[in-house]
Length: 97
Image (cartoon, rainbow, N blue to C red):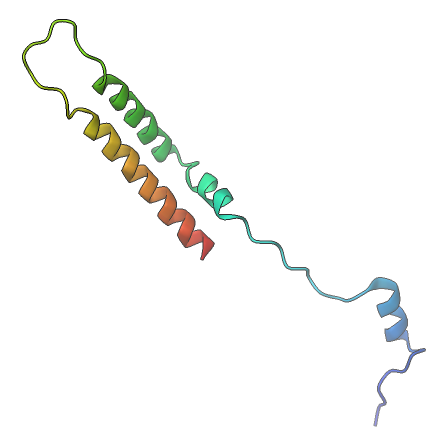
């Protein structure tokens, strides 16, 4: 029957010299890092540009009004921005879990 290693054994000497034999755990990325990673998608970037462009045009008032009411034109751009925000947050939350 084999005995457990004592203080002078090869095992104990190697453990003292090299330390424990394990893989250290990596710190998980922060939620902000996951949001930035999720927002780095080509489709979402195109949608963000389109939303900003749409919002910019919605606040432009034509000097020759044709009688139409454009007071709710900003809703399209805001809806695109809200959609992109929801997709980014849900993706980041799923990656975080």
